[in-house]
Length: 69
Image (tube, one colour):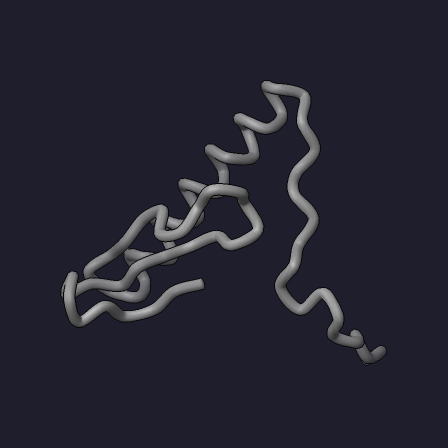
């Protein structure tokens, strides 16, 4: 999730499927915030793998029906 923060004057990034995470990174531009989020996500995946833990199940769009193409 990426949203602009007037208070912080930057884009804040959150990964709601990871427990205990609210805003985990930011960027001055949308593109920068996406790049930073990708780096954080890669680090989280590596950490989960190192600890032998499964990645959290997604809650985003969990009840949304996926239509065939």
